[in-house]
Length: 245
Length: 79
Image (cartoon, rainbow over all chains, first blue to last red; front, side, top):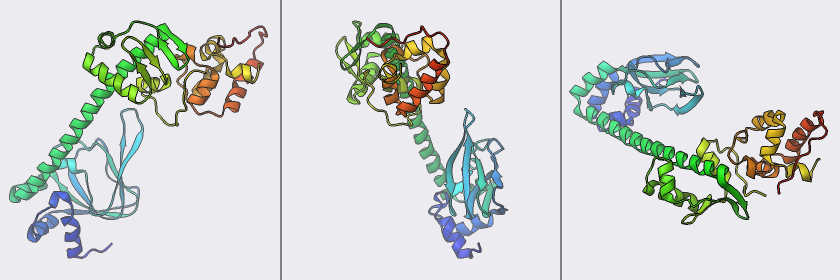
């Protein structure tokens, strides 16, 4: 696990946060780091603890895990030498959102948030790199928020369609007919959304073969898939065709 | 009541008349209990939907009937 100075700088140079720093700047960054050895299974930091340090793995292997709101532990990613983790500390978040645990004896570089901010004042490129990273993260989060909002509306519409099926559905050759004069506008009003969203959602489902939506007639061809959407069921098994036999 | 008749039984009727079968549905992680589509689906439908080992599933359901003392309960077929 011995790395020469050059090898260490080569490793640091490839970290996006340190991109475009010249050699002497990299040396200053390297010198400002603390070094920590962690044994296998030892935590570098734990979810929920104060986010004090940015870390880069010098050698070994670390895994990042998170306990989700519903209590499950999920593996987020593995960290290889040269990769950064715990980056939130530089960017001001109060707590680590995940835990980092060594899965073999490892060596870590750490910079505390204060040190990193001081370095940024000396090296504008470092600050710009951090800004780029933050912007990228924001864009990812915005996309995810839009996806979640879309998923919510889709679930509401799926639930409404299933309630209608339960109430007024009839089995027909190709599936379940909702035997009501039901317009897209009706559905929009039932679900507190608008005609545009309902039309978009129904068209999407039609393309996927879930249903046929005529002007005032809906036939559910694969009703279970609507249940999967409505109830957010895990789609663990390949669904066979489920037209009622 | 085995075989052709049982797998054509209505999920809703089975759950209504034999709530003792509910644990089997839960065990196979099926969403049938309380599902809006209950009355449209037969056991054969849900076996296909959930990709189950049909014979094993039906045997377990059947075992519930064997334990049922009221011999007069008859499963209706889906029309």
